Amino acid sequence: MDTQMQTSVGGTGARRIDVIVVGAGFAGLYATYKFREMGKVVVGVEAGGDVGGVWYWNRYPGARCDLMSVDYSYGFSPEIEQEWTWSEQFAAQPEILAYANFVADKLDLRRNYLFNTRVTRATWDDEAKLWRATTDGGEVLEAPFCVMATGPLSVPKDPDIAGIERFEGQLLRAQKWPHEPVDFKGKRVGVIGTGSTGVQIIQTLGSQAGELFVFQRTPSFTLPMRNHVLEPDYVAEMKRHYRAMREAMRNNPTGGTRPATTRPFFSLPPTQRRQVMEQAWINGGHTFLGSFADLLSNQEANDQVADFVREKIGQIVTDPKTAEALKPKGYPIFARRPCLDTEYYETYNRPNVHLVDVAADPIVEITPKGIRTEAGETELDILIFATGYDALTGALLAFDVVGRNGRTLKEKWASGPRSYLGIMLEGFPNLFAPNGPNGPAALANLITIAEHDVDWIAELIAYMDGNGLRSVEPSARVEDAWMDLVAMLAEKSLIRKANTWWVGANVKGKPQGLTMFIGGFQKYREHCAAAARDRAENLVFDRARESAAA
Ligand code: NA7
Image 1: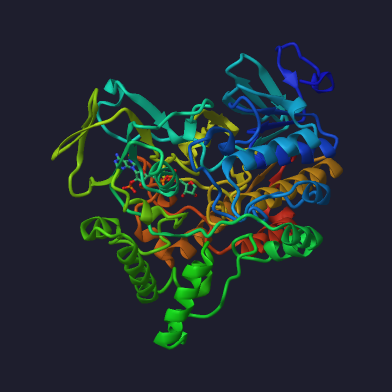
Image 2 (image 1 turned 90 degrees about the horizontal axis):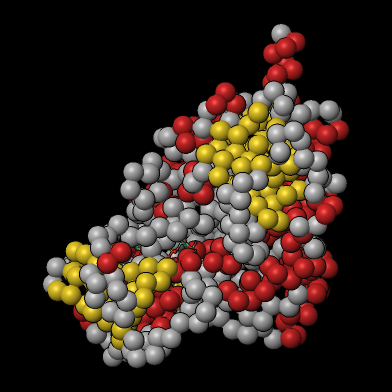
């Protein structure tokens, strides 16, 4: 760490700085840059050995972002936009990690970070108006502001299956993949999990493994990604038009450039609807969802699109029994995050790839040699968990965050996460969570949201600096109103009808419910802008001073 960042060490042994940033993913890196540009002394704390967040950890074969590279990149620096060149429409993990490194180098961000370090506890001192964060390295950081850029998908979740520790083969977790290459040649490989991660691993390992066994509990709907190399002419054009594209992204419900229509499904006659769906299938990507406006609100429209995709699965997969097992049923399409694939369904036509339908033949246990289902044991050399995350709230609840009057975040969120705009929390002054729960995170582009949220926070901090204010938190009234709005919108959406991480269903004992703002990024931005305009009404500044004056 740079010596300029070594600030005063008080009598308590704590290091006194201006802003603590937890995380060196895309939100954390931008926050560190932004606050440093404001003249603040920033220390970032990151559990990984380097920058990149989820892209640092997720090195599994086939890892790739299913948002377009142009969208899934920073918009704050025209220089970075011009200097960095994406090679594919949908970038693979190594390229995204290289991009994060490029940004960190260019902006010299590493000097602000403590790597291989975790925050173990963060406590608000209401008298001193400071957050005090303790790290597992024994360091104590004190700062008026704490930014939790801990990511919505950063706490891996193992499957709830007995016997994991007894497995004698090689056990690999997608979200903590080894840095060394893994040799799959001639090996019997098992994969548990068929969400976005599992789909990417399966389609990649089908041609590498000796035998690949897919233990599928819930099939995902997956649509063709149609990834391709970006031609130099297109890249040049894109670079000329970045500004206009970023503006369009800011005004798009997804925070990306994907078009969204206002056309309802049944406004078109059946033959035209079919044409639109065929075209969406050919175009690939998430364009399907934007082809009709009501796919997440009209069950009948949703059913027809789901039937269309099931029909495609039946056409691709040659073995009728396997095709049937791969067809998702019982939940609306798009209510579980749709995956984008490259020949995922085709992979099941390979003789070395075997689908084990564990909904029909449940897993009993993991044995020293492999996996035992009710029907028998499958012996494996390598077992891969692609079993998801304790998403949205997991990282913030993984350590003690103690707010005003000693109330912990675990207590505040005992019945589910509550926040204001997904950024601030009543009772937790000067604590900010870009991409936090109850915001649009996970339903829109996380980099666009992160940049927006960090800018919003920075503006608030600048306002406080300019007005001699030391602490801020939302009033209980505005937080309740925001939560009512989030719940009211969620109630209208088909998303809550599937058991997914979106609703907390994948973690035993977790409060269930859709805790994301589903009104779209553009509307979210409008809410945030309005909140900033009416700051005095919505936010409580310097509570202590107020009560002293009373
Ligand atoms: P997901 O989407 O949460 O998928 C996890 C998968 O693991 C899912 O298919 C689960 O089946 C499966 N799973 C979990 N536990 C078990 C057990 N015990 N037995 C069988 N199968 C199990 O995580 P991903 O990492 O794929 O994707 C997360 C996000 O990252 C994704 O949405 C993108 O936004 C990027 P289940 O559905 O619970 O039956």
